Length: 131
Image 1 (cartoon, rainbow, N blue to C red):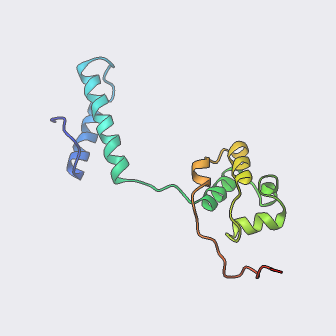
Image 2 (image 1 turned 45 degrees about the horizontal axis):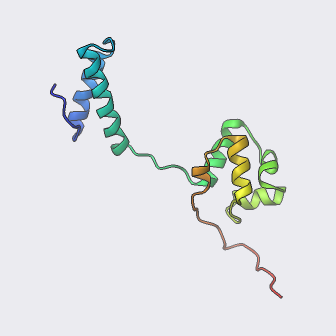
Image 3 (image 1 turned 90 degrees about the vertical axis):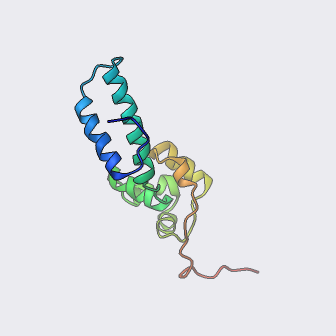
């Protein structure tokens, strides 16, 4: 196989097949160098073809809750009272900077995900009192 950019599914499959045949090539050999180049090309192709967008902040929190076997009560140190946890998880209140910092530092949720904008559910929110 000639090494060239991967543009089609056929190119992709051919590159994968050659990677399999070169899998045990020693680094620093012509075969090892070829393997390294093919892996880089496949990785680039996959990043474009199989792009998976990052989850929104609330989905990320729920994923980490499931992964770490956390309950809503367990989120109180990060988000505030039981009511505040409910408001955030039900998308009635946005995350604050301090919440984002605690979630990132203590639960390892990347801040780059937590700061993304996400839709709020404002339909059932009670009217605010304004004097």
